[in-house]
Image (cartoon, rainbow, N blue to C red; front, side):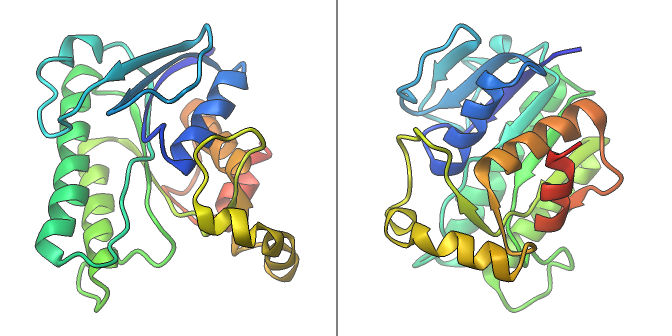
Length: 219
């Protein structure tokens, strides 16, 4: 049975790639994106909500019910940010969206793009890892089907419009890294397929490292 998904971050590299796979994948019947600006894509499955304030979703709440999964791909780098500011734009924003969706879709699968090295003890020395660890922990309390997805180095999907400049210049290194360690890198297409399969088939782990992402993408 095909699922209806909500995607955040569709104007970022990861979110765009995940959206493109969802649009192409017959396990997904509908895609709703919530973003501050248009993604630049059009498709019969795709509906976009342009909304500026992710801390207040009251104006669009009535449109958020009836979905099976949220693929949460919205995020920012912690570089140059203090812990209070990073917590606001990462933890506070993510949890507000999650709590809103939980009210309207209590049984949905919520999949959060986290990061390799995230610290679920919330006590480590790396600020970003503590903040993301708290998000992973609190999402697991909010949703019975919550997955923390921790990709490493990623290869964009052909045709993506939103690719980080670093990947444009250093993408040639990807096959070398993948050959040296299959646990360090995956394609965004593999990431997206793994997220879709987690929502439709489930998975025995709820923290997905790169090796889990690759394995789950092939199921």
